[in-house]
Length: 69
Ligand SMILES: [Zn+2]
Image (cartoon, rainbow, N blue to C red):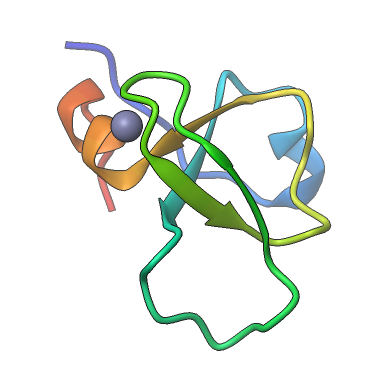
């Protein structure tokens, strides 16, 4: 199983995936953008300053792909 590394904003621009929480999850921010998980297509939300290049995936797909907290 492939391990997923958790990194900061700068390094994140060059990452494979951006892990997002579900669009209907409570968030402390009211200016989040929404998109779709590139794996399962579920609606997700992410910060407006999040990197654009990595593929967005939801936390469930991230767990399946082997992300470690
Ligand atoms: Zn997903």
